[in-house]
Amino acid sequence: MPLLWEGVEPEFTWTEVTVGTLEIAKLLGVRHPMLSEDAPFRMTTDFLVTLRGKSHVAVHVKYWRELDDERNVEMRRIEEEYWRRRGVSFKVITEEDLNRTAIGNLAMFSSVDQEVVGLTSRQWLAEVAALARFEPMNTALEQVATTHGHTYGVAVNRIKMAVLKGHLRLDLTRGVLRWDEVWPAMVVTDLANPMLG
Image (cartoon, rainbow, N blue to C red; front, side, top):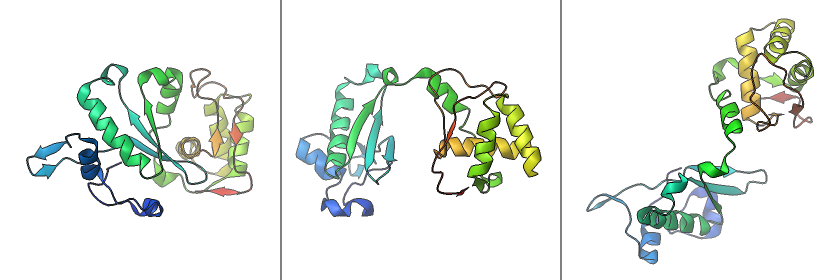
């Protein structure tokens, strides 16, 4: 997420803050990162997460061993103040905060061919979730794909997209997920909306 040198993003105009990273660095007495003597370097935040209710969390990711580096501390001060002035929570995450099982499981959902996903119905997801309690996920997907007249590849992409968008919730921390094993206790969310994009 690029940070503005000056001004404020349209979604944060309600804060009446027009200060960007250049002014914040000056106010903090910290040297702003520069490409050259007269060209500032664009600072970034690793993630800006939009939560339900439209609140935000800015996430700064670093290795634990890098947190106390003097220049990293200065840069983080600019970044944190930038988000504080926009009414956004700021969180620092290191590898110590992350569950390695969850990271490995998330990796299996990272490659999605969005062009083949199309609309997915809650009923379709519920069928997959019900079968996957007793059958390996790849078997459940094959059965539902055949029933609904699409390919196994489309079914895999639909499941991946449903997990990434939060339409299908499952505990990614309990153990390594494999396509050839049962995936119990999945929950289809937002049941009021029958179709998902």
